[in-house]
Length: 240
Image 1 (spheres, helix red, strand yellow):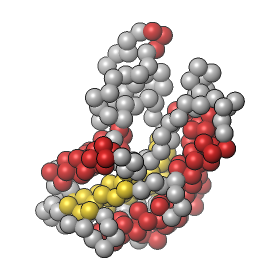
Image 2 (image 1 turned 90 degrees about the horizontal axis):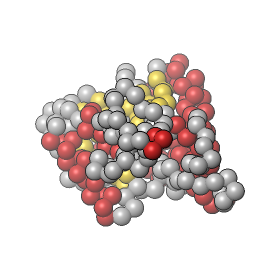
Image 3 (image 1 turned 90 degrees about the vertical axis):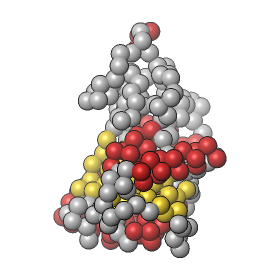
């Protein structure tokens, strides 16, 4: 079914005990997290940019998997770098489920680029899609989060904001993720008195689609099977 906001809502049995919004939910960590959280009495708002038909199909499949696990799901598409898009996805969530308990800001992408080649448009786009979108999401979500008894916000950063290599430069992405972390710390300080917990996670290389082959090898060696508890920046792991 579709609600008045334009989000597609899939039905599952049972009432919802919590409502979770996950951006960047069509692949990688976002998709894995959605599938992990999917259960009866959980409502999931799954959002992706939806830049092409393939990415839209991936999000629809994630929603189908989550619904099969008993969750109630809604899907939405849009570029969070565009003005008003972040606020709109919060509106979609509230229109679909009437509440918001937990927000996972996972949208964004890593772009290899040297500082010498960095242009203003690329730099601005990275900041619009990551720290600016995060700030807009949190601002719009605050009234709903303040009324929740289990309010959580999680921002997904990246190791590129902490590890710098000349042979693997991520100039714009590193700066944007560092800004995201600073905003997450600010949000944590401001929202803690309201009962909202804010955390930031900085994973290492992670394949966005499970079928993708590893793209990096440490020191020319084939990386060992990834461990769940370890995400080393020079190894590629799979979201689980």
